Structure formats: C-alpha cells, structure tokens
Image 1 (cartoon, helix red, strand yellow):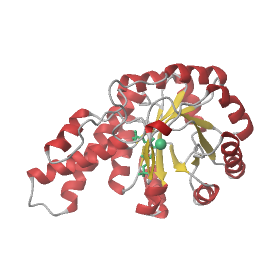
Image 2 (image 1 turned 30 degrees about the vertical axis):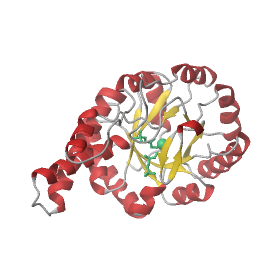
Image 3 (image 1 turned 90 degrees about the vertical axis):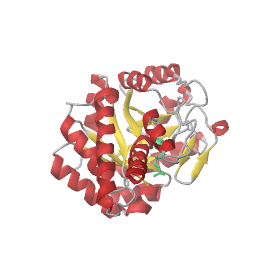
Image 4 (image 1 turned 135 degrees about the vertical axis):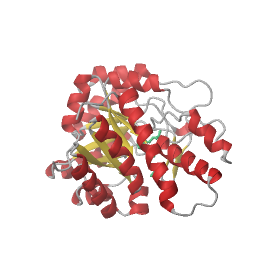
Length: 309
Ligand code: G3H
Ligand code: 13P
Ligand code: ZN
C-alpha cells in the first residue's frame, strides 16, 4: 500500500468516536518506535514532519524512512507537514511525496489566513494532497517561534464556517487551551470544551485537530529531574481530557513532547547507570523501546485507534 491521505482515517475516526495519533518524527529510532507500536496495535498512523525536522534530518531521508515504515508495516500511513508557514514550503512537500500538509497562517489576520490557506488548498488538491489549517493561536514554542500565553487566543466559533467554506480546507486545528511544549498549564489544566462543542455544531462531520496534546507523564519528568534535568513544573493535558476530545469532533491529536521526554528520560538514566557506554546503539535502542511503549499507551488508552487499521 502506498502512503495515504488522512481522508478515510478521519471519516472513520469521526464516526467511531476515536482519534488518529499524529506523531512528530525526527530520526530513525523515533520512526521505528512509533511504527512498531502501531503495527502491534493495528493502528492507522500520521507521521508528521516539522520544518525543524526537515532541517535536522533532511526531507529525503525522512521520506525514505517513512516509505520503509509503509513497506514493513503494511499500515495505512499518512505523511504530513506540521506547521508549514508558507505556500512555498507546502508546495515543496507536496512536490516531494507528502500526502498531507498543514498551512499554519494563524499568525496572520483572518482574511489573510483565508487567502494563504486557499492558495495552498488549490495546489494541494490538484495534486491529490489534503490540507490542515489553523484558526486561533496556541501558546508555546514551535521551531524558533515562541508565542507567549498573553498572545495566544482561542478559536472564535463564529469564524469557522466562513473559514472552511472560503478555503476548502480538509481539517481544522483549533485553539481551546492546549499549547506546545512541556509547560502547558500553571495550576489547574483547563480546556474549553464549550468552544469545541460550538465548532462541532457549526461544522457537523468536519474533522478537528488538536495540537499541543502531550500529557507530559510525571514519571518521565521525575526520571529526567533525578538525573540532572531541570523540568520542575512541567505539566501536560490530562489524558481524560484527550479521550473526551477524541469522542467529539477531534480526529487528529498531535504528540511530540511526550516522545521527546521518553527519549531524554531513557538516555539520561542510561548514562547515569552505564557511564562507560559509548556505542550509540546501547542508548538509542532503549530510547526506541521507550518511544514504542508510550505510543502504544497513547494508541490504546488515549486515542482509541487500536485495531482500526
Ligand atoms: O508543534 C511543534 C512540534 O512539536 C514540532 O517541533 O518545530 O521543534 O520540530 P519542532
Ligand atoms: P506537544 O508539544 O504537546 O507534543 O504538541 C505537538 C504538536 O502540536 C505538533 O504540531
Ligand atoms: Zn502543533
């Protein structure tokens, strides 16, 4: 089976009250950990590549590794550009085999966001590629761009119908209180399910995307801190909230930070316990296992997409 778009995945996820995991990939071990978990759980997958990942690992290497994942797993896998910020970047990914792109023009005023998104949609759809866009602004760090909490803004449900109609976009990322990175909430976590419900009412059957959805497991934070890390106060989205969102219109849940935490906790602990190791396989192997373990947990206990491939 070749790489697929997310169209069929989202249709089934919406009807079935579950969500597809969209995991960020940056190197071979991360890809393998995710894909081994999804293969054992028979889960459809979105592997997403940020522009930072493209710079770090080279798009061709990443695409070839994702193709290897398709070949070895036999799973439906969609290769997605995460947070594309220009038409040219989206076009480059479309021309180079991605089956889905995100145009994130959410930093621009509403009408400008519409026209940039529309331009990407026209090119993508002409090439059989689907498009995710964003309305509202998440707080947190993406690549080198940091959005302070004070500059973040919830999605306005009054804008979503016009946005989707005028752009022709295939899915929509909304801001309901999640943020990127490992420090999402100071105090009680709170998500605006009322906004999600309003969006769902305005766009029945339309797939919604949740970014910034890592739950920041405290056991991993503890291990990192125990071995010299400084992650006091790291806090993510409670998994019950993600399960709730997956039962609603949310069909794609983005997870990156949790994989980073799993890799880092494993490697920090490994070196503390095995200071003489210097073969990268000795620590990257366990890091790959840790990615597999956390992804399995997400697929089965959070997303509910196990057995859906
Ligand atoms: O939303 C951002 C993702 O976590 C990707 O992060 O831009 O550092 O690769 P990155
Ligand atoms: P986290 O930082 O919560 O993992 O979010 C990742 C994300 O939204 C990627 O687009
Ligand atoms: Zn994101």
